[in-house]
Image 1 (cartoon, one colour):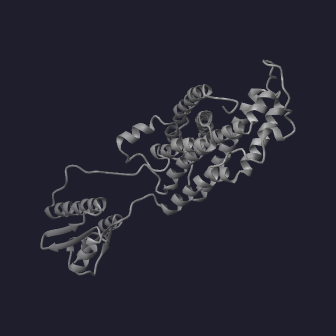
Image 2 (cartoon, one colour; image 1 turned 135 degrees about the vertical axis):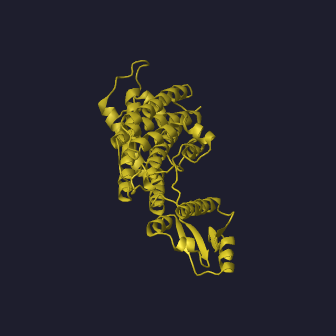
Image 3 (cartoon, rainbow, N blue to C red; image 1 turned 45 degrees about the horizontal axis):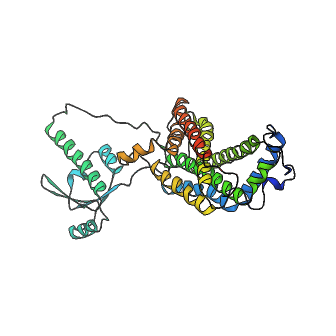
Length: 383
C-alpha cells in the first residue's frame, strides 16, 4: 500500500510554510495558518493516492457488498430429506405442524430408495426417511453433521409429538421460544460494524506508518523541524486529517450498508465518538510502525502483520460467538475487538450509550500507551 500522503504533494510545497532555520528552543506556538496548510496538503495527498483510497475505502466496502448481498437472510439453509415410500406420519400431520416442519426441512418425494441413498452419499441430501409400520427409519450422512443433527432433532420432535397425540397423555413441561431479533435482521447488520472497524484500522495504521517513513526518507521531517512551524501544528494536522478520513469512511460504509438493508438501532450515533477513539488507537500503532521501520516496505509489512490477523481475531470478518474460547479471550485485549464490539452493540444490538463508554476508554488508553512507546523510537531523520 502506498503512503496516504501522495508523492505529488507535501506540506512544504504549499508555499505557506517557509523553510528557514529558527533558533534552537524558540519554536513558535500553535499556528492556525500552518495547521490549515498542512491539513490541506495531507488531504490532497490522500485523495491523489489511489492505493490509499482503495485500501481505505473500497477494500472494506467490497466485503460489505459481498457479505451483504450473498448472506441476505442471516439464517441457515433448510435440511433436505427424502421421503421414500409411504411415510404416513409426516404426510398426515395437521396443517400447522406441517407448516412448522416446512420452515426447517425441505421434503422431497418421488425418489426410489436407491436414488435417495445415492444422493445422500453425495451429500445432496441430509437424510432419507422410511416408515415400516410403527417404526420410522432415518439414514443420515456424516458429511454434514450440522444438517444431520437438524434433521434428527426435528424428526425426533415429530415422533414425540405423535406419540403424545396417540396416547392422549399431555406433557408435564412445555417450551415456549421466541426471537429477540427482528425478523428482518440480515447478515449486513453484523458485517457493517466489523468492516467499519477494519477500515478504520487499515486507514489509520497504514496512513501513519508509511507517511512517517516516506517523510523521513525525503527529508520532509527535517525541513519541518527547521521551519518555523510548531510541532503541535504538524501533529494536530495529521490527526485531524486522519479523523476526517475515518468519519468519511463511517458515512460511506453506513450509507452503503443501509442501501443493502442495514437497520440502525439503539444509540447508533455513538458510532461517531467510537470511530474517533478507534482512529486515535490505530494512529498510535501506525506511529510505532513508522518509527521502527526503516523503509516503506517494512512499514507496510509491520502494519499488515498487525491489522490483518487482528481483523480475524477481533470479530471484524467472522462472528466470535461460535469461535473457540481462546480466540474470544484474545479479542477482549485487542483494540479492534473493543472497537467492533462497541460498534455492534450501539449500531445493531439496540444497546444504549453506556455500551460505548468502555470501548472508548480502552482505545484511548491504548492510544496513549502506544504513542508514548513510539516516541521513544521516533527520529526526525534517517539514520
